Length: 221
Image (cartoon, rainbow, N blue to C red; front, side, top):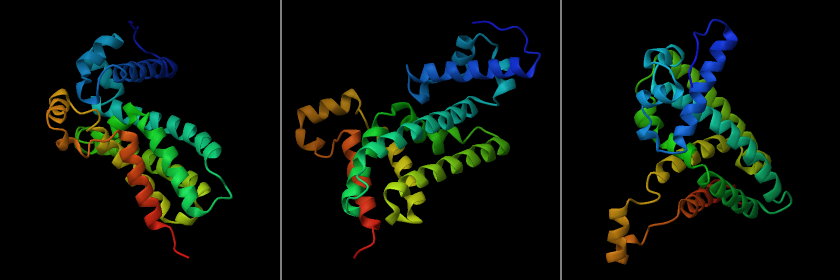
C-alpha cells in the first residue's frame, strides 16, 4: 500500500483509517506486545515519521483501537443479553445468566482482552496528557453504556453496575494473560498434574468471578 501526500481532510481521514485497519490486522496475527511502530509503518506503506503525524505513538494507535473494539463488542453484547436473560426470572437467576453470557462473550474477544491487559502497564505510558484525556472520556462513555446495559437486565445492581462493569473488563484483561499457559507451564502441569489444579479456561474463570461479584452485591430479601 502506498499513499500520495494527504492534502484534504478526507484524505487525512482515509490515511488515519488505513493505519488503524492495518494495526487491527496485525493484532489478529500477534499479541499487543509484538506490535511495533516500525512494522506498522512498513505494512501501511508510510514512513514512521508520517505515521506519527496521525498518531503520536504506537500506544495511541492501540488505545484508539481498544475504544473501537469495545464499542463493537458492546453492540454484540446487547443482542446476546436480550436473547439470553429471562426478564421475569428471579434476580439470582438473571445474575447467573448475565455472568454466563458476559464471560462467554468476553472470552471470545481475544484482542480486546489483550488490549485491556496491556492498558495500565503499557498503553498509557507513552502518550500525552491530551491523548489520555481523550481516551478517558471515551472509556467513561463506553463504561456508562455498558452499565446501562447491565442494569437493563439486572436493575437490582443500581449504582453498583458501573463498578461491576469496570472490574469485569479489568479482570478479563488480567486473566487473559494466563490463557493459554506457555508451553513450559503446560509441560509442568503434564508432568505434575497437581500443579495445575487452578488452571482454568478463560471463560470458566470469568464466569466464576462474575457470578461471585453479582450475587455478592445483590440486595437480600
